[in-house]
Image (cartoon, rainbow, N blue to C red; front, top):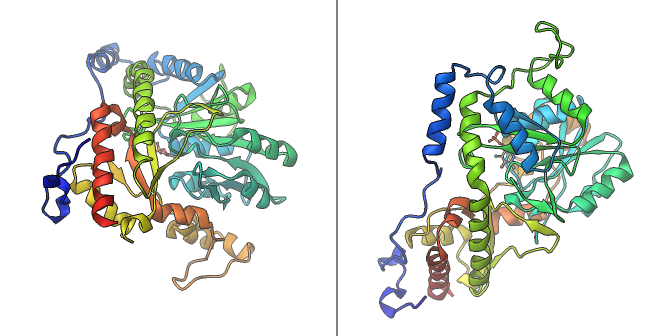
Length: 415
Ligand SMILES: *Cc1c(COP(=O)(O)O)cnc(C)c1O
């Protein structure tokens, strides 16, 4: 990683970029996906009701997550809605979740008439801080909804203890955590239910797709019924015991997912090895601190690689300026990450329209929308974080060296 004085000038200032080569492409696929898709085509069984691929993938994926039951649905968002419904969450019930997540986590609660309540994160993990969760439990709380952020499992021991103490259910948003493990246990079925996403950006994808896993047979039956218009397993076709949705997926998706699942372990190992190497390298750059390991996390999917950015070490330049400079150095699989959900207009508007803002005594801020309680750490994270996307971690060590070299070059130029 030697930098000559020739290329110490930043690319944004007209210098030579650290790198011109592209990072690995996503998605990855080969003849395996092709063969399984053609099998579905020629079988004529394109729907999950008669075809075999969805049944096979559900069983394999549940086993992969060490869960007894799995049900596929069209995406991770609907998986969350269905799971909350299956847990008996009703109108006005409160669901405690993290503000540092994709908007779908909170939207799912709102979509079924419930209220998302945000508890702040821990900045060492970017996951829910259990102490903050306990502070916002009320008699209306039904569910704790942790997100395994970037594939890093939340503290399931501490959250489990809170759930037991207050008689709450746990729904794991594992939409970024395929194969991740907390203390040797795969996530998803550690809590009551867990949801997964197979959307295009995810580490295993069919373009769109989702799944729910559980070890609880009664919950699995409720989820199955909810995803199949309220039918009962083995019951009559036009017998609908409850009101459900049609949330079945197609055999096309399951064909692709079966092939993708075969590749997942090797890719996870590669991402993890690169992530560890990158943590070492970036930790040498002043002002950059990647999230460190935790011995309780025994396996991690690495959907996004998270690093914290300290503007003070970069001459006061903002995180967004740093991202711009990195991109021009040829490091482009990067993003600033989430806006904290307590600041998202759509969520605040919904809380106004459904009367919950008034019921919770929240007043409006200058933009006319209710001001949700502050989450200072998530808000800090939204300003001072850089994400590296999962596919960048599928490269080799030289790719990681380039990322470190570019960050170091920018730091030296600006400090
Ligand atoms: C991707 C994602 C979702 C939503 O999944 P979709 O399949 O895109 O609907 C929910 N939660 C988290 C944390 C996610 O990353």
